Length: 184
Image 1 (cartoon, helix red, strand yellow):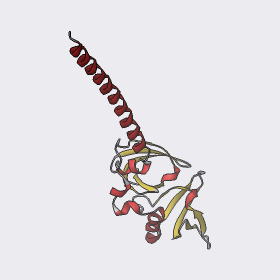
Image 2: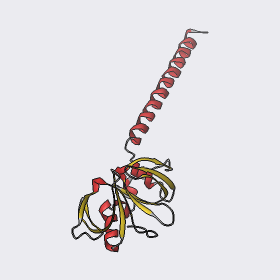
Image 3: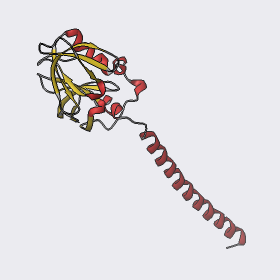
Image 4: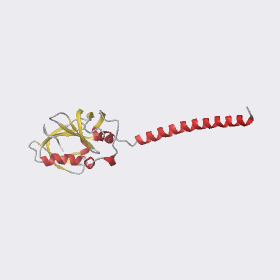
């Protein structure tokens, strides 16, 4: 082998080593980018990709809610738990979720109804004038009628009470309307 052939063999070897190092660096960069992008995925975006799927939510103060996920918004979701009951669940009260799609839907791709707040869902109950069961994150239950909905609270009338009770949204885990009717 001539010195020129040895030199070219040496350069070829260096080039292969450089390609190997570049490949490893590229794989690391791709993995880092994927992890960074996934860090922006929210539970709500995973739920949005799971609309119409059977899910199980562990809800603070209420326990497990299982059923078909019907609607999702940034701070609430609607789970149809059988033919007779649907729950409006505040997302901050959800501790664990099972049954979601491995995909997510970025908020920019959500339908307009996905941008409606928790108050909008409660206003549907107020407009219907129906009785509901409202469960707080500490497990307290109110069998009441939603009278009015403010920015961060709801007014409830229980039984024969003349004065409504104000309940802050942050204290609410979930709400269900009358049996057989879908709230919101």
